[in-house]
Image (cartoon, rainbow, N blue to C red; front, side):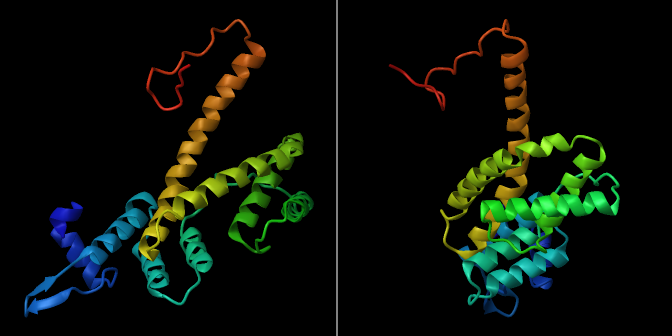
Length: 224
């Protein structure tokens, strides 16, 4: 199993002792057989710890959710998503009036978009804090574009779920939620920066040369 996964034997033994991996099938008093299910679980644990940066206590909760075969897929994916902290900067201090105004705007956005989320969801709190920060620093007009950002987020979420749905086993579903969220956030942030550079050049530097054409046969290139 160590050779197949690239994970050191001591680490695998530690996961077994912590209950993060199911026990193998005993073939002798000091030997056990491991299969594909163990490799899938290993990949999940590594995704949670290495990519998600989760402590083992949180990993244990996700593993428990995976092993609950009666849990609906929506609840399983929610449990996985909740283990991944939102990587946001600390919000700017704001008074209660500003915070209340931001909370009302967040509630109105959620209602307007028809999003099926609970009002106490951690992401609602994060959204409210970010919006309050915009108001507190005097740039509340950024929030005039909330629906444009929300529409883009909906398209990204649909693509995320398409990515996750390509797998069926619970371990693989959860692994894809964690990997897609953590690495997807980093990728989207980079793409946003690139798009900002492009939009700025087109708006404020029309003399800037046209972007290079994609190399022949590369993704996104076309012929004809």
